[in-house]
Length: 166
Image (cartoon, rainbow, N blue to C red; front, side):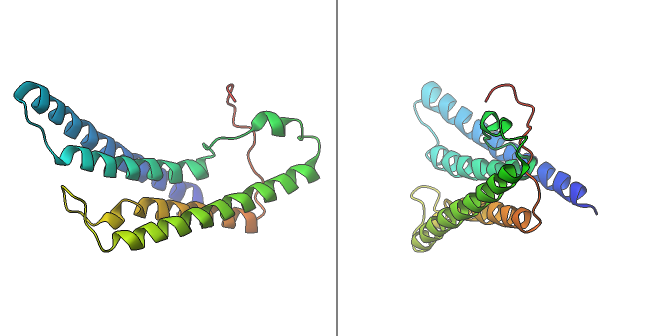
């Protein structure tokens, strides 16, 4: 299986997981609203479940967006450097190093939160609290490894995203 097929398959899996999170959240919140306003009672677990799924959905999406080049880019700034390949290459190295550093800091903080959550459970559903910061840890690890691989391979950055709004 080629790298593009693997990336495409990973993207598809991530999209399905995000859709599942969004679907469950929508159903849970919808029924909670109907029960609360229609019958005067609600589902206590709805808020907690939605919060957990939202965090997972956001970080699955962030991880899937990195290899696709869909994170925020400052293409206007870089557009002026197109005729300076050495500067562009140095900027690419700096950006990837900063991404790796950010992932290390984010991952360290997430790990600390995972450790804190090992000894407690959520109030309503009773799931282990380490499940809430876990997607942050996994996302920072995955993005950091992807950026490190690109840095080692000296892969040029795609600054031309074809986006009109910057």
